[in-house]
Amino acid sequence: MGVNKYEVGADIDALDQLSVDQRQYLGYFKAIMQELDTQAKDTVARFEGGDEAFQARAAEFNNAFEMTNRGFSRMIDAVDGTVDGYRETKSYLNNLFE
Image (cartoon, rainbow, N blue to C red; front, side, top):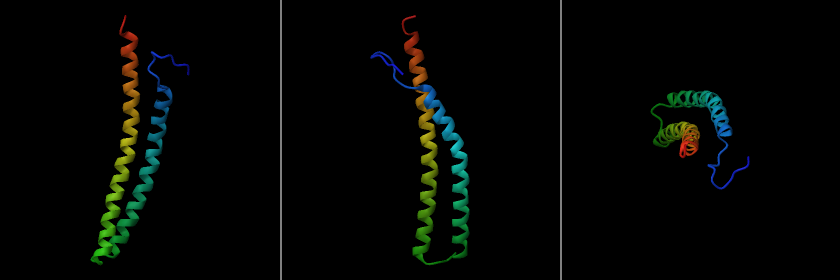
């Protein structure tokens, strides 16, 4: 892609395809994370009332699980936002002097 010094440089099509790919993998990711969550909750249920260290680890897992899910979703949203932003900027600049 040849970019001159006045062009907004971004391969919007590649970013858009990245977003499509990420959304496809999001389904796989959610399925894996759901299986992990199910197994973890099953394990915790077996040891309900266990010692404080075990309960703390279970809470730590739940927190990490939620953070991981939110992080993956934010990454996809960021790519989508970047694609939209570049499209708007390019459109604005292309129409600026018309």
